[in-house]
Length: 228
Image 1: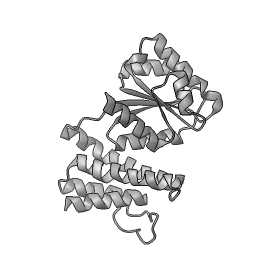
Image 2: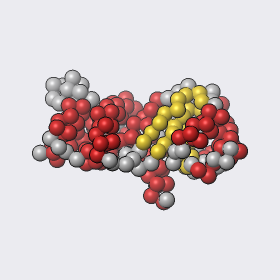
Image 3: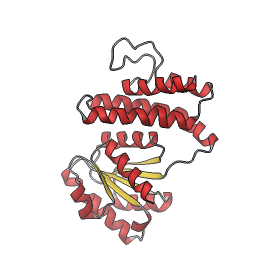
């Protein structure tokens, strides 16, 4: 029975249905259980939490990513699916702690100084949590010194830096330089992303990786995680 529920979770994430009141991408689905109801049902039936995440949430977002890349899905569709995953992870969080399932790694993420945009960052956070990472959002418009302080205190495995404006890209380099000066650069892997950013720029400023979008960012971190 649990496998059927997990499959329904997967399908409803792809449809972007958080609750039973949501219509979904396909018509006629309103009134049927959405992701939150299905996750609660899965937990009540004794489904394995790690399977709910890997086979229900992560697998579904891989499908959403493919649909986004081929142009079948657009940003609002992706956001709806990401919101469904975020809602599911909130329900699963206490059960993860009780089950003793350890996160794949700890990630801090911030939008750098001068930039208040956070839609892309928020998508990345949801996708990373769905992929099994512990993620802490430091916030928007964060100065280099405050990011350094957070890295020192939180001791993350990864640091994600986001910028949407060309004028704020320089803050990424400033942050990496500040980490160098603080002796913390070698303690954390840094991934950067945002509309004006490129893989070439990541190499230029000494970052460890570049995420073209939320799905790519997850794959980059997974690759770095596997290489350790």
